[in-house]
Amino acid sequence: MIDFRSGVRVGGSPPPIFDNIDRWFHPETLFQLCSIKGFIDGLDEGRTRTFLRSCFSSCITLCTGRRGEQHGFFADNAALPSGQKNVPYRDAVRTFLDKTRRAISATERLYSVFQRQDADPKRELARIRVVKADARALTPHSFGLKPASVAGIITSPPYLCMSDYALGQRLSYEWLFPGQMAKDFGIEIGARRTRFRPEIALEKYLVDMELVGRSAANLLRPGGMMATVLGAPVARPFLQSDVLEQIHKSWIRCGFRRVWTKWRPIHWHRNHGYSKLKLELISVYALER
Figure 1 (cartoon, rainbow, N blue to C red):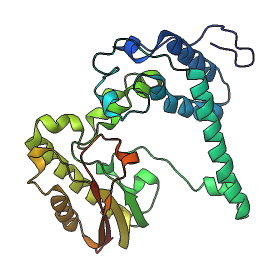
Figure 2 (figure 1 turned 90 degrees about the horizontal axis):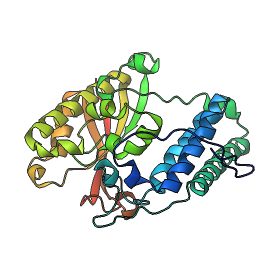
Figure 3 (figure 1 turned 90 degrees about the vertical axis):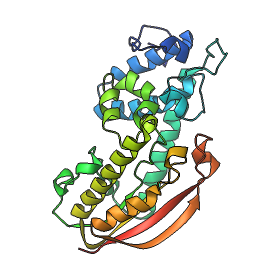
Figure 4 (figure 1 turned 45 degrees about the vertical axis):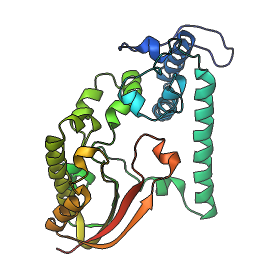
């Protein structure tokens, strides 16, 4: 790895083994990434190591020839544009340090908010929990809560056949969680890869979305609110399906009543030209039972 105090090369973490790694990363960039990962893995303090692993993950795609491009290229394992043979060099150390500085700066701003509000950061942050769970099978037990005790849910479920979330993060999986990507992709709702069998994809998606509605209903107290953001697929096989209306009807069956709705444009900085989708629907539901 690189000793960041002296810049001396002293070995590093071995590179991950996966197809096309030599097309994703310039040799010098790959060496730098291995050095950074070796440095992180060698840290004793767990929270610092987790923080830096997050920073490392966020800079991996920026160290490829697809720097700044939408995640569909990563999902499709398209490391270089058509006709391009040479992998560009990216300064991984500078990218990593920049990401880390930005993350620290954001953390400092958060703590300054606590300070202005005369709040105890430790107590406030202890109120936050991050839970990895299947939205189709959530129960109050998933969060350590009492049944029918949640006041509100804010969620943006996957849009049908628009994104491959797991595959789009393939490089982070390969570097940090080897072997986990296939499992996570297998349980994904509405994955883009399923678009080649549209009738089956639509049927499964609608079943999954009704299960999401049931899970939400089990969490919410009577009168509790659920706010959602959804977009309709723009692929030709789905244009006559009125997917959003079918989801709405399924959530009505789950005991919800829609109390407010509004269409909003999807701005270019979120879309990145990946999809022709221009609008998404914001809805607020109240649980009636």
